[in-house]
Image 1 (tube, rainbow, N blue to C red):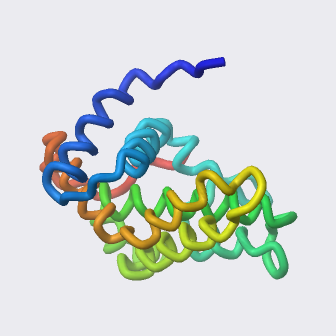
Image 2: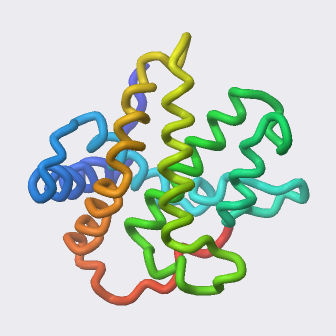
Length: 177
């Protein structure tokens, strides 16, 4: 069964391809497609803030996300949950660092610094890439590349932001759901 494409997928795919392939020389259709789908997913704030604390409130702090991903000392009930949360951390960090880098400078008590955001995203994609057996075997190399190229992917999203004409200051990511 074929899933229906997001109405903005072709638009975002072209913007990401222009930036990643055209301007950065990052010629990887899998990475380009993944980042375009990520942009589509995060047009909905409930996807951007899908991680919830015990009280059901959205979690937007990287430190709390990392803690939630730990299946031994944190709240992840197992390794599949760890992978899911780590994937979200990588996605969230890539999106915020590329599209809203100013947000790491605001409300310092609650937000990770830009270097912390980048480190958490890169590490999370690396951890996801280590889930490389059974149902995860096919996509593990994609997450290894996302980890290796994390900084370039951030730069590419910054170029996407510019291409989309988003030159006005954006102070914060979209509000919590």
